[in-house]
Image (tube, rainbow, N blue to C red; front, side, top):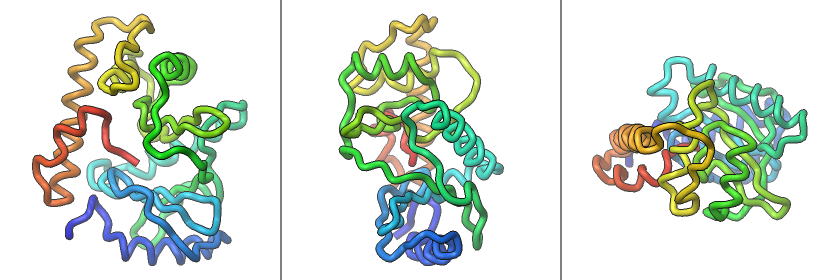
Length: 217
């Protein structure tokens, strides 16, 4: 069966070698997501490996994107911002893979904040700010995935949130032309979904779902 960009069995084998070389136990790895990136919990270590998958195919400098996410996350964590913190050796290349390591954060899978809480979190911190990048934990929301962080208009961040039912109506951030940014984000999501479908061999299956939030990992 085609995957989203890497052969999972091969990637897991190579990850085991890299984890042990990095001093991270990896006796029972668990695939958390195989989308834009392959996310693997390196059990029994409290560490998640992010492996460039589709992102490596569409971004010539995917390692640069990973390094930017690593740098932004470390900067924010050092200032007490609740983010998923990088751990280990940072971003590495190993046997054809680009990999970043981060702390595993126990959270409620699929849980979304209510609109008011998400609006407050969005006003505090902008990044790749769709709701699925905000982990709901016992101690509060934790931001994840700064791979697409950059300088730009606030309308783009707001549009990341707007298509989600959990954040419907969250637009009071002074963004001009919210309809324009929402439509632009929708088109971006559809295009990204088509790339995923091509990799999976399931053309058309994900285009509708993608408008609810850009697939990633």
